[in-house]
Image 1 (cartoon, rainbow, N blue to C red):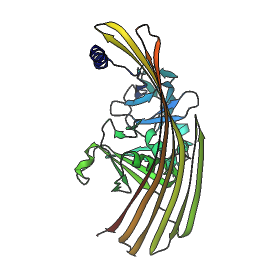
Image 2: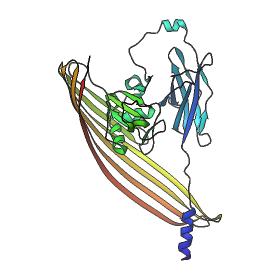
Image 3: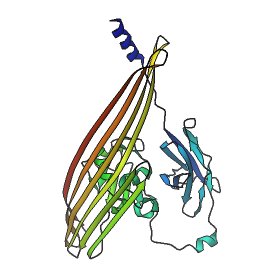
Image 4: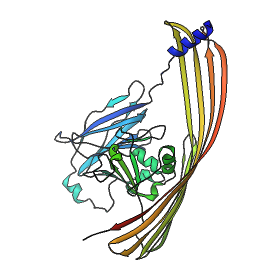
Length: 384
């Protein structure tokens, strides 16, 4: 009985803390007259290689914020129409500096002579701020080449994806994900795996709607992310092949193909994409046990998990044009994903002298497969 009482007491008062690994960055954008610049494109870049990490749009006060940013060294690039692009100095997010408020930066006016020499191109800007939404034109940024849909979302303004693949918009959960204006029934891990298997080359744009209008379902009050897929407008038969590879701690790769046939009366399209990646999760927990302020022992836990993932996505559909004002179509989306997890956990229990008493080693393996398919039939008629 005494042993049971002691153990119960220790468990009840035991606790542990995990070190914070994310921080927040904010900056204000102004012009030469010290007035705030609204709708400036503000990009958070990794210092060592200038890789784009996150994008934000400045508000009416010129403020741009980046939340849930991993500890590292960064710099910021700010740009706006008619103003020169400006960079900040490098700065760091770390355990001792989790909140960084950068000094305001001023964007200078481009000289008139420079403006006259600018050639206007048809290419859309990477980020567009419209009245009711933010539009991410995926093809307009080279950083998106070889990326997947979920990687593009991670870089997009206001979107956060946590370690459990939950997608939030401006800190709000319950975001509705749409494909071509239609809600997808997938959620959680199924949705994340589908987005990981969807290459950016298949996406035309992403509409981020933070305040949906009445035409959308009330369930979308937290926001809507509408992924608009490419549709080849050229007549005849066309196709593409894409591939991408990456290397971090472990490799990742993706490959895909699209095929499209179009004439005046019908458009038939399809694509298939495969993605592979290996994830690593290394968690270290140290706990100290006290009874009335007196140290009674501790334990150290080291969890190492390796998780390879295979994602397969396919899409096929057709649009029929019985008249210039009428479109009848159908589309089917499917995914098949394989997820494996191999975890090794070592736990050492230390006595009151903080010397090891026991050591436990546990090994766990699970292999899961997920299948999903959804289709819709749609009709559109334009009235005079």
